Image (cartoon, rainbow, N blue to C red; front, side, top):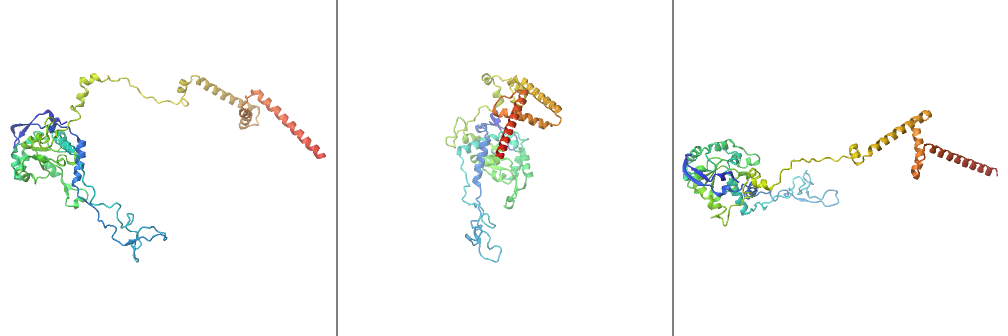
Length: 419
């Protein structure tokens, strides 16, 4: 919503920057919602309708005699230039991958250049652009020099429409303190970037004030030679001029008669427009755009819940296999198990140390291998491991039996040899 809605009346100034004593009611279109997204969308689409069609020559890349060599010659089947005796003969032609060939997808003049935009969207964008011209902060954000302007929107008497000389127009701009904006335009004159500087549009300028009138009684002739100044008839307002580049906030100077006609052209929320068939101003999404006022209102405070002052912080889940504290929470006996496992390791190390002392000829690796050899058979068969002394006793008789069997086998072989 425009901030100018808080000021229902607008003062009319003379061409000498004095109050004329006449006040005009602020038109309803200045209270409309400022939708920058719709303005930008409509500006982009409308701007497409003034593009100059362009295309490459339809014969480009095909102005040569070329034919494919066919298959069987171990070369690509791209058309090749005929003849001989030059570098060009035998080279590929026509294809977009060939030197001197046509481009891929040559541009055509029958491309879809124009874009249709809904009439209601165009009107919505125009009304939003008009409402933005009454907000001083938006106008200044566009770079317009309005620090000395008496009032925004600036409305002047209809005497300006009768100007026919540029001298009168410059004097008028000086009187109403709008000349700094024109000087800003003159300082901004520079060379255009790109190829446009070679196409009869070498220099570019910024935008200055936009003067909106009702009847042309010579005003176009007076202001047409001043750089940066745009002239618009109130009956034929243009979004490309009110929001250059799709950005709202153009500095506008209104004549009194043009300002009074806005309600009849665009209507209000209660009365329809007189020139547009059954058209009313768009209804805003929010009737009160002041969010701070809404949030702090008592009606909203009564319905919403009180603030939650307890802070709940997310905790990272710890891995119990790596974190002893987390394992202790899940299994309090884990501390005892860990201590018992540590004691077993200490006892096993002590046992190995004693064996090394008892048998100095064995290395530590040999002792570990012997201990493993005793443990393995019981682990594979699923039997219970015997006690410390029983392992040695179980191993001794097994060796004796194997020896007696070996002796009996050798005796049988000896008897068979004698026979």
